[in-house]
Length: 316
View 1 (cartoon, rainbow, N blue to C red):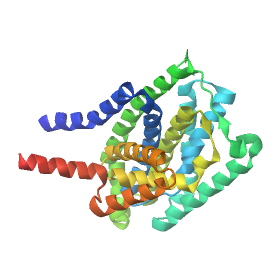
View 2 (view 1 turned 135 degrees about the vertical axis):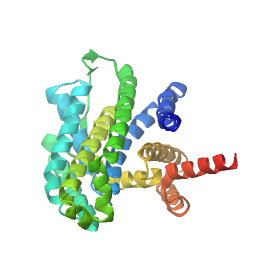
View 3 (view 1 turned 90 degrees about the vertical axis):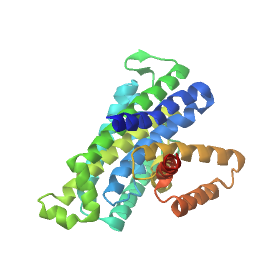
View 4 (view 1 turned 90 degrees about the horizontal axis):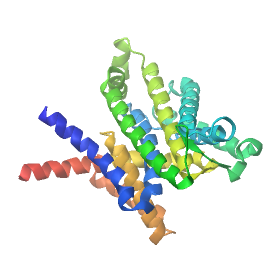
């Protein structure tokens, strides 16, 4: 019981620090809001990495959630919770359709097919100017949250803490899912899919469910990002955005769901700082950071923190 409460406290600490950060430095609220949006995508990739698969096309579901938010705010409802639900359902539906094909493939074929679908989606969003605004994108104007009209500045704070609550729920749900039989089947899919089939469990179905869940999380991240920036563009579906999500998943560490949050916050902080002081070399700096993580902390920042914490306890 003592270990359980200690683990729960350690898990809640990053969320509490994240909640307090904008109160201490209000200028960091947009950055932390975007970091939480990216965290949802990294959580989705974490599910696939648990199955030994990597997607270079998850920006498609991220953009799907963002454009669903823009369309919903313009044509259906201007309430934040309503358009978030629309974004999640749209991305999950898209993931369900594409997953019928993608779940048949593994490894490099799965990764490249995701990339191909993502680039098809990017091209459609870019070319369908009358519907999507083309390269100009679409504005996102949200007027209320849970039926309560809010001013722009107040809505920014409300969105931040709404996203934080959703992130806490997502972390809990993903943790429970990974510890459940379907989540354990994802891990078995990575180690020995043939043995999984002998047990009467369809590897294709296991990956399909994980893929749809992952797409829904990416769509949720797209909705938060769209409302946080107030604008959506086709670049949200470009392959480089998908590469960023993979970068964040590796940076934070795939051994724990909190690694996704740590990776996203670290990525946004390093990118913002590097862009401010080395605008023409921030990609180089991010590349050096990734190489250092792979060489010296292959379990990511979360694994590195656990290792240092363990050494400290051992010394004590």
